[in-house]
Length: 571
Ligand SMILES: [Zn+2]
Ligand SMILES: [Zn+2]
Image 1 (cartoon, rainbow, N blue to C red):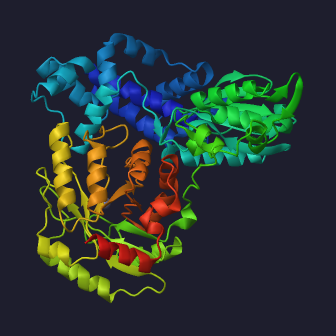
Image 2 (cartoon, helix red, strand yellow):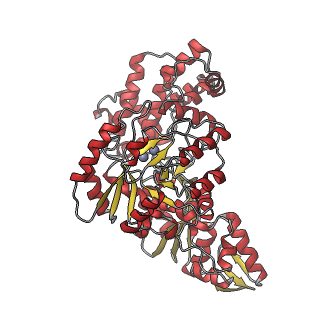
């Protein structure tokens, strides 16, 4: 495997960091930083230059010494200087350096001024509220830092949405291989989980060698970890691990089911098969030694007496019993959505005009949108006050985009005491009101529950947005009595939101299932802040499907007339 430019640049950056930590000559530090930039900016792979014996000193900022380092890294995959520096710096320092928001300067100051030398010490100092010159948890950087300290040692799972373009490109690459019939990314990715730990790729082909070879030679591969006749494992440049298995068409369905999981679902399916005198494994469904099914997933399910179960439901949360009883939900699909009630514009923190958002919504196949810009509240720089809201209302009246109706809403803050941040008479003039907490996430369960119940009691509240307030990998969900909140929402004819922002996906799947069981309708909102934002509806809906929602559980599948009637009933 060749060493890619990114790996060389990373090594130079780390050398610069470590030199800075050890108070080395600033010119030397800068030389490595510049070299990292130069290497990263090359369109051609430098390992090819090294192999061809071309002179690297033609590159800006690369002298004799650095050219030698590049050659060393390319040919040995190691760098003696980097290893020496790593051994000289205390491990705690290196760990601190890898935390978000902490550069070498801050790490040095932490050690010299505050005697903070390890992540554990930093965590303790922050918990004690010591002033140590790092951003506080109230800022975005600070929140990320605190989250990273809490997750330390536990590898953070990648957002599915970040993995999606990687998965798509890899699928495309493998589909182009001769004799490859089908390519599917299975595992938690296929089940639509909000994060993925790695990717499990399944290929159907009668010629495994070609697929394995193409996989291991893929551009984005950093390391080939294992390579066999029908399977291989690699790590991509961005650190994501990918496993590939190549299976013949006759067993593809069984393998697809097996590698889609999850484990608990698979165990239940195997037990069902055993009771029918069959044996189910990744190669097929067997009676004795004879394969009786395995070409498609439908075949496998049918052989144990079940209809096909959508991957999003395969979590052993009752889906097998539901399938047997003929009670599987008809899961909501993207084409069921008629509108989107959570849309921002340049009137608050969005990037596009009302008209541009309306056109983008039409292009996304919607027939109505609701503008729900932020209210002005403590610390929000772009929020609307009563006066701005009146002006926005006139601006909406002036917009006319064929085929799209624009409704008037607001995303108003739910304050810590449960009141809303705008006066009742202002809210009364709108088509609907979205309420959301953007602070006070840490209230204890009792106070948080009281806060949300009071907000739901507000006569004008229509939708409780991103109710858990979580940011995946960054901020934990708020704790409150969800059953009590849902019961009140049903009583007050208020809806709860599924927010489609990839790091929110809020309410989460199990909470959505409870909302459905409690008879509380769900509004699926893109929370679009720009014209591209409606693209998040489709991946966001995976969460709705994981929660078992059908089209009739989702309010914005209603045509405009019926939606308006529902809005009127709720006020
Ligand atoms: Zn919000
Ligand atoms: Zn919003």
